[in-house]
Amino acid sequence: MSKTFRPLHAILLVLSAGFSATALAHNPMCECKAIDAEQIKCTGGFSDGSGAPGVTLDVIGYDETILVPGKLGADSTLTFKKPGAEFYVLFDAGPGHVVEIDQADIEAP
Image (cartoon, rainbow, N blue to C red; front, side):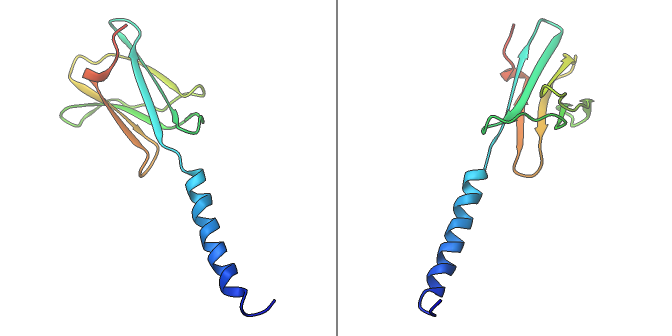
C-alpha cells in the first residue's frame, strides 16, 4: 500500500467507528400505569426495542428514602403496591440511562 492511501484509511477508520457507536446508541424508556387503586405496574426497556430484565427500578419518597427497592423481572416489568407517601419511580440502567417518573405522571386505571 502506498503512503498516500494511509491517511485516507485512518480517516475512514475514525469515521466508521463514530458511525457504529451512533448506530448502537439507545435511549432508556419506562412507563408506569396504575392497574387499580392499589397497584402500579412499570415496564422498562430501550428505544431499540430491547427489554431491560434485571435493571434497577426503585420507588423513592420525596424525602429520598427508598420505599420499594426493585429490579425488573424477566418480562421487564415490576408491579408494586402504591405507597402512602408521595413518590417517584427511578429506572436506572446506568450512567446516561436513567428515567424518573413522578407519581403525578402515572396513568390512572
